[in-house]
Image (cartoon, rainbow, N blue to C red; front, side, top):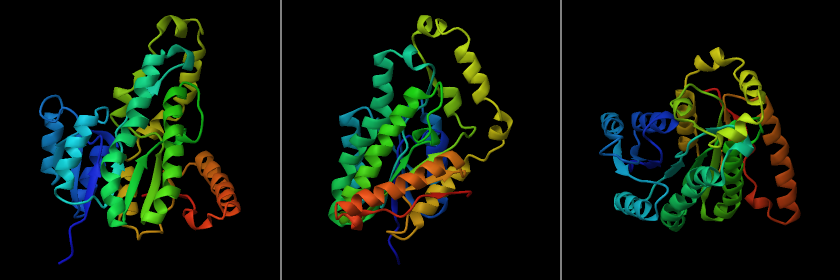
Length: 290
């Protein structure tokens, strides 16, 4: 009898994290869904994850102590085959209208949180010389749009760290992939943080409203999308043979991000080849219509 594979998903209380936990559990994985406030604010979410067949572990990506405790619990059950860095949140507003404290919190969650989680699990995965690390990014991790500057900056930073680690972890037999979802009707919209300097935002006049109206074009199409497409794409990557997974996957296909990813992959390949590191080059990027 084959060993049941283990997956760890951060930010599993809602959205893509919750859907990914459910999809992996339905596919036969032993899944640890991690979230904050598991017995209080997110008690209902915890119960839903357990009902889907997952194991719930308290984990706050902002806390060294919390991450260390969660990792100890999970690693006692076994080394993860897949580590999914999903925890994060979106922000919306004019760049100047965010105070440094608000920007620091965005990066602390979306970027430093993943670094903290990686440091807790990667030593065991490297020692075993196999595994997959998934970073849930966004198409705005490749394409800059008005009002998404702070959020995009955090995702651009995350993408740089993820791609760099894909080269650094390749000799250890660990794949790294980046999933870039487009807009989907998840809870992220309801939970979206906004710029916190109202007087600064007001000084821009109606520019913010104009940008917002432009970005909301096609909202009805977005509302009709199936958010589980992203979860299915992650499950597909988790089940793919090692060494065959594309570095970046857009869900659904996104012409702008796909074009940037294609050019970037070619340039990166040339740079690494020139440095005699061609063995670290990842599989070309892809699009998913799960």
